[in-house]
Amino acid sequence: MAVRQDIHNSEIPVLCRACEARHRGVCGALTPEQLVELSRHTTKRKVEAGAVLVSDSDTIDSYANVLAGVVKLTKTLPDGRQQIVGLQFAPDFIGRPFKRESSITAEAATAVRVCAFPKTSLDRMISQAPELGHRLHLQALNELDEARDWMLTLGRKTASERVASFLHLIARHGDPEAESDGEISFDLPLTRADIADFLGLTIETVSRQLTKLRKDGLIAVENNRHVTVFDVGKLERRANI
Amino acid sequence: MAVRQDIHNSEIPVLCRACEARHRGVCGALTPEQLVELSRHTTKRKVEAGAVLVSDSDTIDSYANVLAGVVKLTKTLPDGRQQIVGLQFAPDFIGRPFKRESSITAEAATAVRVCAFPKTSLDRMISQAPELGHRLHLQALNELDEARDWMLTLGRKTASERVASFLHLIARHGDPEAESDGEISFDLPLTRADIADFLGLTIETVSRQLTKLRKDGLIAVENNRHVTVFDVGKLERRANI
DNA sequence: CCTTCGCCTTGACTTGGATCAACCCTTTTC
DNA sequence: GAAAAGGGTTGATCCAAGTCAAGGCGAAGG
Image 1 (cartoon, rainbow over the protein chains, first blue to last red):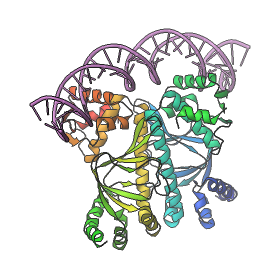
Image 2 (image 1 turned 180 degrees about the vertical axis):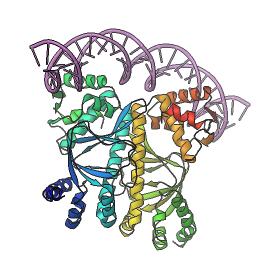
Image 3 (image 1 turned 90 degrees about the vertical axis):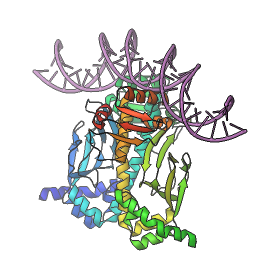
Image 4 (image 1 turned 90 degrees about the horizontal axis):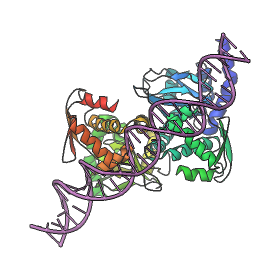
């Protein structure tokens, strides 16, 4: 017990600075006293890629903040067809407030660090700190905007537009202010199979479209992971954004 | 001015009972005094089918509750391809709190009655009535769940599964408790073109799939509008829900 | 009454992306 | 260090859904 607290007395401020930075974390909304209170029930966990954080139809009894890495939110049909319905980056919040059970699965797409806390203690704090409820409300609205953007992609875009949209999404996530005519490079946080599940395509189609972008001189790929986009503006035009 | 108040002194309680009924409206969260205050700035409007309530990239300066009819939320690509990203029924709330401009278009799919109020007065009330903010938070989370459900449909389901899912969605909206092996009938609130835009298909494909369901004896259609589903359970199986 | 218009259906044909299959790297394992 | 396993690519073929085109039907309007 003492150990736990020691860990968190040193870790929490770091976490909170991270949350604050992008105005989406939970901790930035709390007073120092509330932070100490929350930290008493907090556990920081490393999760390896592929591990499941929350499973479909589980009862949810904890929330988490993503500290590092990428978490994919998925839905699966009875016959195994899968769709990624959201990607959570640091410092996003994972969990479904005001509901006992989850309708989606949360799975680590890369190695992930999360800061988890029991639902009950956060729920209690929501009623005490209105600013915290407001943060969660903002994140929900943000995720709703993202989900609807993606619905347009899934419903109406071609395979090549989808792949370009995906690269653009990841690129922007690393550097939202990137020059629209500049070069940018980043590591893909997803495998081809994940990308396919995100785009509603097959891995073969994703692979072919990436090859096409490579041959057209828009991107370079190293080790199947590291991508350089030579001209963000051209990519945007391909993505029809 | 006197006229306006007269209208609303009589109309508001009705509206609020409607909102209360399904726990998603705005008015149920307010005290009688706040209701009176809000009603001072409220206008009730009839909107004919096809009229645009909020246009993409407009600055939003009002919110609305749907009182009757169906509102479609759409996104459109530069070349005209369109996707419906949400359907709002009574007593849903329309508007994007905490943001100056909309990224989607809201358009009346049927004849619609709405109760509109200026953003500023509702925003003021949110800070005074935490219960109101909580309602809006709940609706956002609800819409997020719906959007993610639909992402699975758009990304991974076949045309016939999509059409079955759509019928199921509309059927359930009229009667969420319908027996899963019972018969149910309802009016489609959307044209074939709208259905296609909702499902990410073409009108011809929607038409063919409806014909198939008819020939298979799962549904009957009158006047292209009124649908009877003979066995909700069978429909669910088709929809892969 | 006939014409026009909006909406829907149906048929013929085309095609983008899925499927099936082979193969190529790395990395891991024994 | 050979074998197996886990990604990724590429090619050949197929098919579900898109496109194009014709026509039906009811409502609106002269």
